Length: 484
Image (cartoon, rainbow, N blue to C red):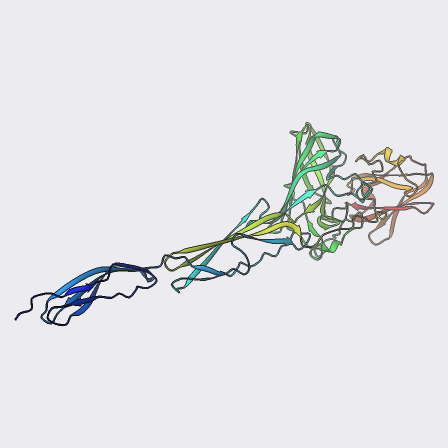
C-alpha cells in the first residue's frame, strides 16, 4: 500500500498582532497513515532596532512518506503605546510654579528643571528632553539681564519729597521752557555687560502739551568699593541722608545720551553729558540713591547743550525716579518623553515670575534733610522755586536754601537763600577736610527777602566743598558744592 495523501492541519494559527512581544500560537495536523512533524520557517517583511517587526511564518506539516501541507500567516510585533510619567516632583501637567524676587534689584532664583520619571510599556529605555522659552515684555534675553520701571519719586506724608519739592522726574536749570517735569513712561534696560539704558518720557509740570524723551546711556556700573578705587576723587550724592551708599551702583552717563522734544517742544534736541565732568559723583542707583526718598531709585546730574525752539541753549539738569525691578515674566518649560519606537508623552508647566518681592519692602520714607536741602525748598508746593517760597517759611524752618546754580561751579554760580525773620547771617565755605576756605558773606538779611550771592569758580580748586549758612539764632543749613 502507498501513502500519497498529505497531512491536514486541524488547528492553524491566524495572523496575529501584539504589543512588545509576540504571542504563542498552536498548530496541529493529522495524517491518515503516520505521525506528522510540523516545522516553521520565517521571512522578514520588516523590522527595526526597537523590537518592532513583521514576519511571514510558514508552517510545514510532513508525514513519514514525505507528503507535505503548508500554512502561512503573519506575526506583527509593535510598540504603539506612549511612555507613562510616574513622577513629576509634585508639579502637575500644566501647573504653575510661582517665583518672587529676592530683593529690590529684582533678583530671582529660577528653580531647576524637573527631573521626570517615566516607564515604557515595553520596558525599554525612555529619553526625556526639555525646551524652555522666556515669555513676556520684561523677560531677559542673551543681551539683557533685567528691566526696571521708573516712576515719579514717592513723597513724604506732607506731599513733598524729602528735599521739600513737589515730586518730579526731571529738572532743567536755566532753561527758557519748563523747568520741572513728571514721568509719563519709561524703562531701564540692564544689559549683560553691566551697562544700562534709561528711557524717560517726561511732561512739563506747567504744560501738559510739552515734554522730552530722554535716552540715557550708562556705562558698566560699579559697586561702591570699585567706584572709590578708581583714580582721582569719587564720592556719592545723598541730599536727604537716606539709604546706604555702599550698597548703591554707580555709572557714568555717556555722551551718546539725548533728550528729544515732543508736543510743543517738537524739533528741539539736547545732547547730554555726565556731570560733574570729573566723575566725582556718579549716576547712582539704589535705596535712597534718588535723593528724594528711601525707595529703590536713581538720580543723575547732566550737562545739556542743544537747540530749543530754534535757539541755542545750554545748562545743567537732573533726572530722578523710583524703580520697580520686580517685573512679571514667565518661563514655559515643555518636556517630551519618548520611547525607542518614537511614541511620546508631553508634559509642560510654567515658572511664573510674578512681579512680587518675597518679603514686603517698606522703606522709611522719612529722613533728616537738615544737613543739605539740595536744590532748595519748594515751600509753596507748586513745583518751582522762587520768592513765593521765601514767604512760606515756617517758624520751624527760619533759614531756607533756595538754590545753587550751576553746580558744579564752572565759572560763576548764584547762591540764593532766605530767612523768615530778620537775621544776622554768615556764609562760610569749607573744603572736604572741614577746613574753612573763605567767608562769602557776613551781615544783615531781612525777613522773606531772598538773598543772592555770586560764587566765583576761581576762588576754589577742583573738589568737593560745603557751603554753610548760619544765623545768629543758631539755625544752620548746608549745601554741597563741586568746584571744577
